[in-house]
Length: 278
Length: 211
Image (cartoon, rainbow over all chains, first blue to last red; front, side, top):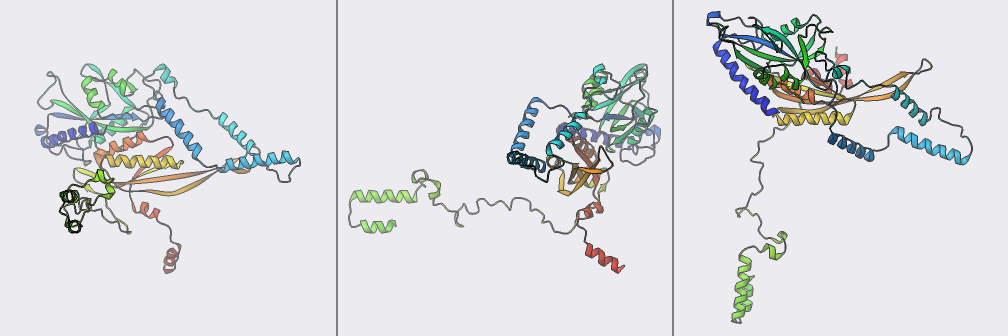
C-alpha cells in the first residue's frame, strides 16, 4: 500500500515542475499568495481545485473468524496468566469468612455492609440497562445513498452532480482557481459554498493528494483553454451535513466500491489512487 | 613431539615403524580431522595474529558510528526549506485508559515509521494520570467512589516529515487506531520538553527569594 502511494507522489511532482515552467508564478501550491501572469503568455490549462470530503468511520469493522479465534485465545491466555485483582481477592476472603461463619454457627461482630455479591449484582444491573447503538442502521437497510448514517465502519466520500456543457456528470465538488489564492483556498471555498449549513472539515495538509487532467472536446477548445487540471484536496468531515430530505438527489455519500457506479472510468482511476480504505 | 618419537624409535630401522611415523606426520600436519577427532571443540585452528583468519568476526568498523547521546537538551528548530516543506520535530501522542493498548499502538506507530524510513528521535511515556470517578448515590446526596481510571500516554517523536507525506502518514495512523485510543499530533515545543522534567521546589524557592 505504501508503494503505490509513493509512485503517485512521484508522478505528481513532474506535473508541478511542468506547471512551473509553463506558468511562471501561477503555482499556488506553496501556500503563498501569488499574482497571476499576464494571460496571453499564461498556460492554456485551466486550474480547478476539488474537494474530497470524507466522513471517517464511526465504528470499527467486525472481526473476521480467524481474528475472533485469535482474540478469544489471547484473552484466555491472559486470564490464566494474570494475578488476582483487588476485587477478586476480596471475593475470596469473603467466601472464606462466610464458610467459617456457617461452620462456627455464631455471628461475628464485624460484618461487611456491602458484600461482594451485592456489588456484583449492582454492576450487572447497570450493565443490562446499557443499550449499545446499532451497527446496521436504518439507512443501511434502505440503502439510502444520500444519508450520512450509512456504512458506519467505512469511509464515505461526497459526490455531487454538476452540469458540464449539456451533460449531468457525477464528480467530486470543485471550483475554478482564482488568481491570488492558493489551491487549498479554492478547496476551502468549495467547502463553504457546498451547503447552507456550515459543514466543518479538517484539512490534513496543504499539499494536494491527487490530480486529473482532461482536454476539452474539439468544439469547446480555444487558444487559451485547451483543457483543465483538477487538483484534489482531502478533508475529514467533523460536523454538519446537507439538509434532510435531500433535494433533487444532487449529492451522494458513497464508499470506495460504489464510486464505480457514479464516476467516469478515467476519473475514477485517478481518484481511487488516493483513496485509502483500510 | 614428532622429533622425539623419531629419536626414540630411530634405534629400530623397522619399515613398520617408519610407516607409522610417516602416517603420524601426515595426521598432525595435514587436514584437520574434525569429524574423526570427535567435535569442533577439539579443533586446533585458532585465530592468531599471524594467521589469515585474524580479525574474523570484526564488524564495528563497517557500520556507521552512532552518535553518543549526552544528557543535555537538544534544541531543534523547525525546518522550512523552499519547495520541500519539512516539519521539524513532531510529537505523536497516543492516549488510552488501557496501558497494554496504548503501548502496542505506540509500537505499531514506531514500526510504521521505521518501515517508511522516517527518523524517530525518541519514544517515551508521559506520567500516568489517575482520575477518580465519583458517583451520586441512588438514595441520598452523598457521592461515593465508583472507580479509578488511569490514563496512559505514549509519545513517539518524529523528525524529517515532508509535507506531502505527512498527510498520508496521518491518515494511515488515524485509520489504524484501535478502539479506545486517542490520537494527538503536534509540533514539539519547549513546554512539551519541560513537562517531562520534574519540578524542583528548592530551585523555585531560591528563585522566588531572589526576586
